[in-house]
Image (tube, rainbow, N blue to C red; front, side, top):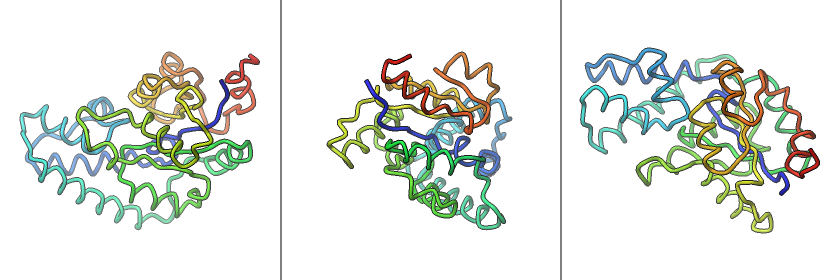
Length: 235
């Protein structure tokens, strides 16, 4: 079968910015004169999903029907506010060992994609500032998910995008390992036909172990050689 690519979730896996997103989402809901979500509801509705899906579903649960124009304007406003908050930080909240892990993956000859519901401008801003963009072959962003409803499987989109960048790769979902921190993201990757490594940045290890093929507390615990052996059928 063979491992050919590793697909990284972004928020909660590469960058620890979920508290910023939750704060901005709360401001959006409050501005609509509605009750903001508590942490449990936010995790249930928003983690592992795009801003479009998160905002639409939160407002819908509160009986608010919104137009596409309102939704698009709200997403643009949130993106500007997010960038303002990032600019005010002395250092980006990148999880430890991300750069080291990506370098190791590239040295092993594997492709890397970033797969996220965030806007591409947000993803590229962070990858540039954190000196990570050099390792990334493809990005699937929130704009790529807005064309259909319900939200398409972003991991399958990443496979298609990586395959187009290098047709000789002949990439299939079973050649990919997804790395994700959320239950929704892990489920999406498994539904795409991928094996998944869960990183316990957001949910406790025991919850991830029930869903993912592998689970680690920290990204530095990724045993790339062992995982490659599993994909190659040696284990």
